[in-house]
Every structure is written in structure tokens, then in C-alpha cells.
Image (cartoon, rainbow, N blue to C red; front, side, top):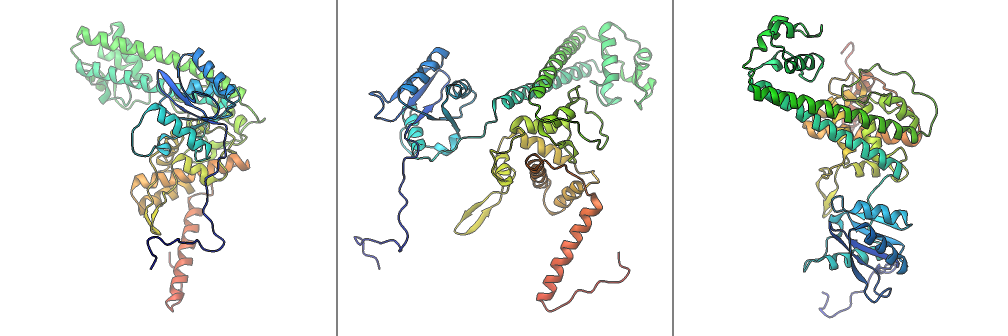
Length: 453
């Protein structure tokens, strides 16, 4: 029994790990909307903690003060978008800037203030206990901002389509019940003719595309409404807003095209693959060729990944995977790998962590689209659905897609689909192998039945 005041010695060859200062020239910054609090080592200035307003002239003064204090490494919390101007300014001035997760730097319980927060960041950074979040190179950041802007415009355009449908419903015009999409070619022709003053159902119905299954009489019947002025005015404004966002989307696509041309690092064109129809909301230029010249590989050869999904992933990560040492690091950053919540040597939960990652969201959508696919990935997704619930199967398949993307970008190899039959045969062989081993342990031997399916 160990006495209360006895000294417990460590085992031979083992010693207590002491914290050592690895970044003696580190500073910590607590980010705010109106001002930033900055802490430097106590021996560098008589006032080691200062407050700087968020105006540009004050941010330059902040950088000058850090240079005067011989600071070379800066740690800051990610607070909304307020950190971006200061991050870019300090990075351009030659500082090593680390953007840290606020969950990883929670202070010990007690009083909380901006001064204490920046001092805590500075202390943790000095001992090397913080790691910076992933941020791609500047040119990829430009592409990322443009693609996110395009996604925002598409969402706004979708809201105006809902406004059109609302105006039609209030007029009891049941056009949405006979055609699938009022934002399509037929729907837009009919709506614009209605706004222009046309009320004859037969004339409006004759504008339908040949692929529309509904007859002219059915469309004419659905267009019998009350035509109230206020609802027609709302429909007209929704159409104008829809067109305006369409022009903004075209302008945004031109900017994305130009930025992809600046990021070209490879020559040639992608090999001919599967013929896929162009999605309606996809950019109008040759995005597949542009992505190939940027990455050196054709990511759209992976089943489920189209040009929009590939650009959504590349705009978030870039084509250079050197920041991720292994594919496991990449999957962990995406939030797609199984969790490792272990206590007492027992795995408590394997649930993936909650992560609002846009690249992971795009891969999840691509995984969900594999359900009817007659490919090896489609067979894998259906097998996962048979073993677990659908959200977990989608995450597992998105994890597999992420590993394929990482392998293609790091090794420069093209993806070749072996087909559903190849995957099913490999799966059957694995099952037979494990059954044979289990039967051998129990003292039995498996014998195949002749002429069995």
C-alpha cells in the first residue's frame, strides 16, 4: 500500500514528459467584429496585450507591432468571416498564421474575457499545442470563393422559381401538375407568354416541347385561372428576378473559366469516357477539360462524380494533396472516416464527427446517386444499404469516393470501373474464404454443390 506522503518512482527508462517551448516568438489573437485583442510574449513589450480596431490602417499597425516584437508565428480563432482580412494581411507580411478550431482551445473554467482568450492562445501556441486548419493556396481560394458564389446564386434562383409556383397556385393555374418543371423550356415559354398578356389555353398549350407527355388540351385545362392583377404582378417580378440571376450566373461562369485557365498545370485533354448528359445547372463551358488540365486526371471517370461534383471538391481542396500525409488524414478532414471514441480500451462509438465540409457534402450527394448504377461502386453502395441504414451507407460510399479522389490526385492514375459483376464475384470469393476458414476451425469442410447457381 502506498503511503499518502510516499514518493512514487517511475519505471526505469521512463520519465515525465515536460512541456517545452517550441514557438518562442508566437502571438495569439482573439478575433472580433469591431476589434482584435493581441497577446505577445511578456518580455517583448511593456504592454504585452493590446487592442486594435478592425479598420485596415489599424490592422497594418497590428502587423507592424508584431514585427517590432519579433513575432513570426500567429494563432487566431476562426470566428465567422472576421478573421479573413487579418489572416490575408498577416500572411502577405510574411507571418506564419495558424487558424485554429475554437473547440480545441477552450480555456479552463473560470472568468472569460477577450484578454484572457488571446493570452491563452499565445500560451498554447508557444508550447506547440495548436495545429492550423487546412487552407488551400491563394489561387485555389479564389476559385473556391467563385464556386461558393455560384452555389449561392443557384439557391437564390431556386427561391424565385418557388415564387413563380406560388403566384400560379394563387391564381389556380395548375401548370405544375401537367409539366415536371416550370423553370424548364416549356414552362418558361408559357409563363412569359402569360406575363405578355396571352390567355388562350390552346395557344399556350401549343408551346410545349415534343417530349412533354401531356396533351395540348390537358395543358389548356390546367391554365384556366382567375388571372388576378396582383398575382400576375408577382409572377412578372419573379421572372425578372430569375432572369437577372441568370445573367449573374453567366458572369460568374466566365470568372470561373478564367480562374481555371490560370490554374492549368497539365497539357492534353481527357480521354473519351462514358457519355453523360449535361446537368441543367452545370457551367456552360467545357468544365471537364479545364479540370483535367488543372489536376492531370479525369475525376469524372469515377461513377457518381460529374463535373459539378468534381469542381466542388477541387475548389475546396485544390489539386495538391501534399498537406494531407495519407488518405486517412484526407478522409478525417472531410469528416467521412469512422470515429474513434475509446475509453477503458473499449470502443464506445464509431460515429463520424459532425463536420460542415462542402467537399464532403458534394461526395455524399454523389454517393446517393449511385443507387441505380450498374458499376462496382453502385454494387458497393447497395451492399452497404443492405447492411446498415441509408445515411450510414451514403457516408461509407462517400468515404470510398474520397479515397479514390485522393489516390488519383496523388498517383496520377486513371480510374477504371471493373463493373458490377466483377465486384459481386470478388465479394462472393471473400465470403467463401471466410466461411471455409470458419468451417475448418469447427472441424468441417465446405464442399460446393455441382451445378448450383
